[in-house]
Image (cartoon, rainbow, N blue to C red; front, top):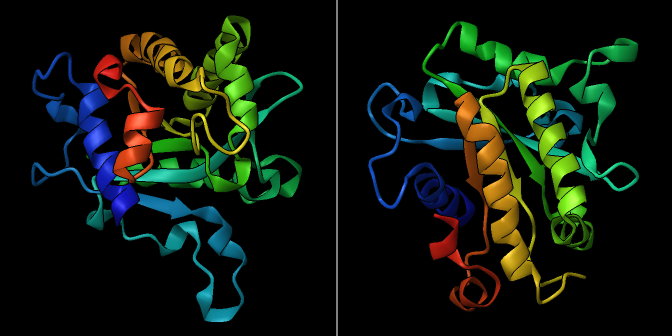
Length: 213
């Protein structure tokens, strides 16, 4: 619930331009923003615990967030963390396209792709964000993947800047990464959100939210 709330708040932060109203095209039918994360690993739960893309009721959400893609440290580009589940190649389940395909019957629905998550850690994202060339590769690949699979945007879930193998400079580099992503995504009409830590001390220590907006 906390992550959901923070993503909701940061959604507005990243969509606004110095507190101007966010784009109403990103709202649900009732004018509310209801962000629903889909933990795609739940497809592997046994028996009735399994949760698949066709288990989703899109009417409950204004936004679905496909969790997660990851970072390829050989190329510093976005990658599928579970090709069998995410992609159609090699007889895969094609869940990327299945989830974005829900928009056909629910045209107001927005479907974004989350990158990161707890298991991805922080060290690799810290290294990528610290290097302008690596950031550029990551940003370009994010835009390419969004376009290829018809996502409506990206959710950055770097857990967490300055922590878990990160570096003190992450605080500034997180801002640089967000700005680079915004410059690539906004002209194409894509959404950019970020999931951030809930703790007030962590917020003060690890983020410069005023500079992100």
